[in-house]
Image (tube, rainbow, N blue to C red; front, side, top):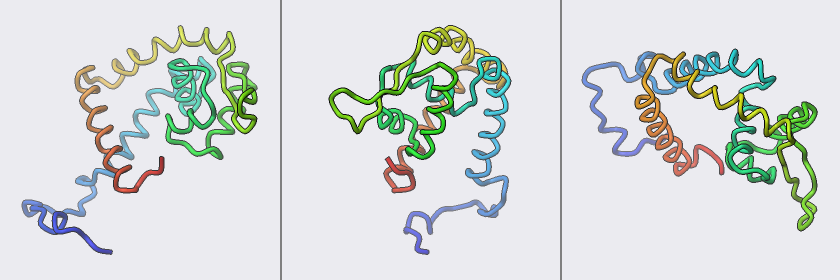
Length: 161
């Protein structure tokens, strides 16, 4: 494993660079579990898991979408996305149909029930902000930083488009 000159010249100020509580990956993993635990009881009455909620968010923002477009928006591959779409379809929230212009593409649309669920979902962001106990401005800054981290990781080849 090689490191760049930038990585070799970091000044850790005498602290152990391998200390668990200094690791970004650890903080992100714990935060991920904590935030998902906040969402879970909010989404359960809607009959959604968090991954299904993300699919619905994409569709509420811009339906209809192809499966490929949803996968790109959520950075999920087809084997991960397909079971989510099947469950949402069996719940009566979406339909999947072949594109009339390209039979290889599946087009995902919201049903009336899927569209109606949006009104209930509009309460979720405010409840999440309240339950996390931080300000909206702090969450927006965190979102901005995480977006930059994800973009940098994508450029470095750590994530696949």
